[in-house]
Amino acid sequence: MLEIFLKTLPFFLLIGTGWAAGRSGVFPAEATGWLTRFVFYFALSAMLFRFAATLDVASLFDPRFVAAYLAGSLAVWLIGFAVARARGETLAASATEAHTAMTGNTGFLGVPMLVVLLGERAVGPVLMVLTIDMVVFSTLITLIVTAARQGRIGLGTVMPLARGIIANPMIVSMLAGLAWAGAHLPMPRPAEEFLTLLGAAATPGALFAIGASLAGRGADRPGPAIWLSIAKLVLHPLAVGAAALLVFDVEPFAAGVMIAAASLPVAGNVYILAQYFGVAVQRVSTAILISTAAAIITLPLVIVLVH
Image 1 (cartoon, rainbow, N blue to C red):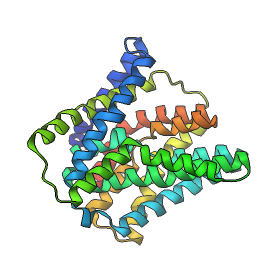
Image 2: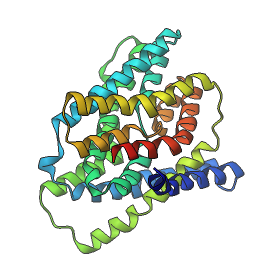
Image 3: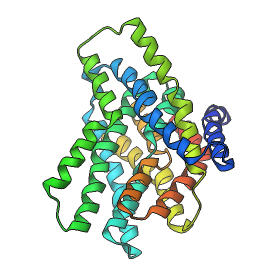
């Protein structure tokens, strides 16, 4: 446990450094926004392309893995939704809480951290989790909130959503990398060195940006946020683990990566969605803050159990 904790500690120290820089005013909110854009559009995209370009495309898609992650995540989604409805929340707010309970920070935290901790073999499963979260569950929350407000789902909702998914730089970079791998194209040495150099900025940049973005978050409405943090850090890995190991018999290493990915704290893009729709913004923000702080302890513990 201590060894794994010491391995994960530098990642969280980077988050803490970003938080301190943002809290002190040395790194203002505007700078955080531009750093996030750099990581999102350039550094992380370079890392994802390089990772995807080295994968064996034929063996990447495992129906059992996809089914297990979908089943476990959907179970937590339904629990989060039911708890919110039982408290009297609206349909839109309940769907937002459900999304918060099972959407982890796979892009900015999971990809750089889990690949370092679990090795290059973790790339495929981590990218699969990231894709399912972005394509399936982000689509689900958008459709539900839109339907709750407009009373219907029309082509005017679906088309912008589809364009947003297709234009997402993380999806574009992964698809481009998989196409490169599928075509069995050699990677020129200058391109490899360029992608490695640019991708190396993803880990420190993403972690620093996470911390800086947390600096402006308060801990208002802690009750629902604590529940959502517990659902994300405890229920989600338990649910996908049970689905992977007890129901769908997923290969042990891939199942372990899935469980580790499910134990990540709440993703920042959940807040972006909540803010865009104007639904449950404060409790989502607080859940991100609480779950990220608690993950300093819970994430190493899950990784020890996975090992």
